[in-house]
Structure formats: structure tokens, C-alpha cells
Image 1 (cartoon, helix red, strand yellow):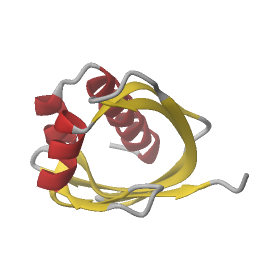
Image 2 (cartoon, rainbow, N blue to C red):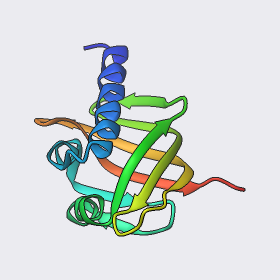
Image 3 (spheres, rainbow, N blue to C red):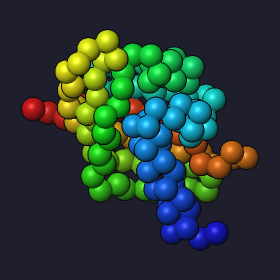
Length: 127
């Protein structure tokens, strides 16, 4: 498989992640994150995989996830994806939604389960 094919697979996996979160398809979300996941939110909150899945299932509802242009650099079975992400979400216990924009760095790894995110780090953009 050439580099462009790998990039296309990673971009498709990223699209699947966004769609699964908005659809509350937590089984699919779980498949797209590696067991060793470290997830750093733009707020500084840090989760492992189990904590993030519980947070996405019980605390917040993703209404939309938009990505700008994504830069993907492949290094064998590891890829680094960077770019802007804008989330529209709400706490499940509240009615009002918020829109949060940040810059995201994702580390994708390729293994028996395909491409999975091993590290996700979001940073708030300056106002």
C-alpha cells in the first residue's frame, strides 16, 4: 500500500470517528481508539480510553464535529494528523449547546484492528 492510500484510510477513519460520536455509536468509537489512548481535551481534562468512552456516553453529546484542512504525515505504521476541529456539543444534563474550536494533534497507529487513535491532544485557539 502506498502512502496516499494509507492517508486516505486514515482520513476515512477520522470521518468515521466524527460520525460515530455524533450518532452516539459508542461501539464504533471504541473500535477507533487504541486501548492505550491518552485523550487531552482543550480544557486540559485528561482521559484514558475507558474514561473517554464514559465521558462521551454519559456526560456530553456531540451535535457536530467539523474539521478544517488536515495534515497527515505517515511514518510506517504510525501517522500524525494535525488540524483545526470545531465541536458543537452539550452536556447531557442541559439543553444549551456550546461551540468549541481548537487545534488537534492525533497520533494514529496501524495494527490488527486497522488504524486507531493512540493519542489525541486538543489545544484551544487564541481568542
